[in-house]
Length: 275
Image (cartoon, rainbow, N blue to C red; front, top):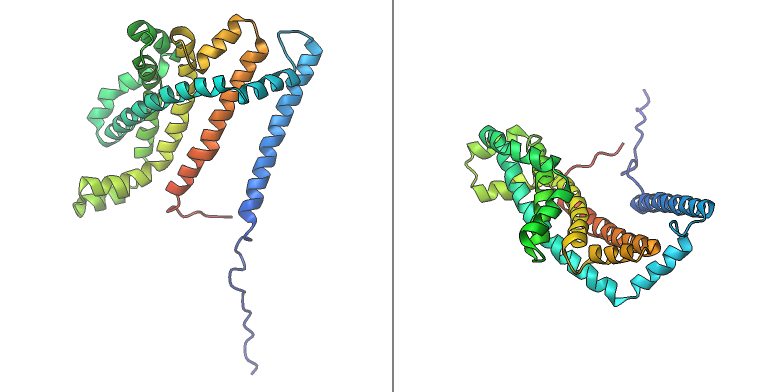
């Protein structure tokens, strides 16, 4: 009788090539570049078709963008706006996380905070901006409170929904073994809530950027919103669009350079299944 033939499978035969992540990043960058190219091309076609000073072409906007990028006025205004956004978002994040966890842990807390979260989600950011301008004037408290009131409800809802996805068996194990609160927060709650926290952070930051511009337009004498309002008063459409483009570029840097990197590091413990 002949011995059975055993086929050996080379180790890591199903493993991805080492350069696979690099190729995926390259494809992602190419897709993003294609979207930007289509957007710019469509805008240029529209500007050429309308032939109006109200719709400047891409070269005119690009010239103004380069001017802003090499101007100290832009970085000065951006620094002021970033400080206000950072303080307001930090306050909103702390409040939103605390309220969201409380709503997920206690039915009584959920019923207590639900009306406030609902009201906060339905009130436009413009209303908070106007009210804070009336209440606090040009003080730093004005943009900080306006951002917190606008972003905290969305953060609370995101964290609350995240608490409902935590494995009940893990919670039961932590209760049975009497883990201390600090241990539960560090090794159970924060890792499990990381996706919800980052999703809420993205939503909160987007709301914060919108609200800070409104606050600076209506009630501040500095910042990016104030400069956009000056360009609007001068009827400089290219200037308004250039400030908007620079503002969007800063948001993109924060998203791709800060949030995504932090999210990847926070989720390294999760098992990634590839098909």
